Length: 230
Image (tube, rainbow, N blue to C red; front, side, top):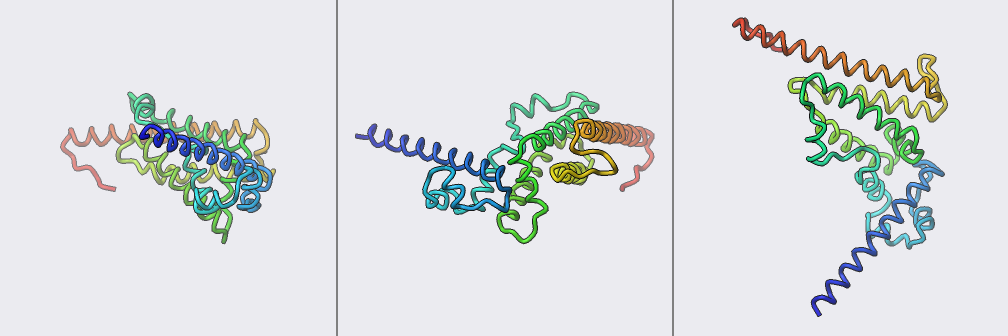
């Protein structure tokens, strides 16, 4: 009897997981077809071939579904402790490489995956509850990503990341709208190759500056001179 109840519970969990996956896949398809502003409960339910009641039951509505979608790790990577241990830099000079590779890979994904680009656009849509929820979830995921990769002590990696990621987000949205930036063609691979090289150069320069500043502070401390507090 007990085994039968467990089997029944397991079957319910599996069915819910499958239905959830269908709903998420349907959401992606509708986003790719119509953009964030064209998504609704009825369209997603019809695409997933489920009752819209399930979307409210599982997610509390479209806002909850979007938040779940962003946080399931499809837009921003989720680093497990073991992965973090593998990429954690052995030397300070390795920090730049970790950061610029992660930024470049993340935004390449946004440029090649239409649904992800549309979700990224939520950060600039005004007066829309779903866009606001999605943008907030994105920011939480970006904050999590930055905090996991903040290997430099004493540097304001949060502010630096806000500038870099904000710029890359804006350029990615501009590219989707077939725009240019400072005459760089954001629709071309050549244009994005230049942008990616610039990101690489920025992180390498910041890394060198941080190492130099630390060396100077250590030298001053060893010479018994007071170190200025900025």
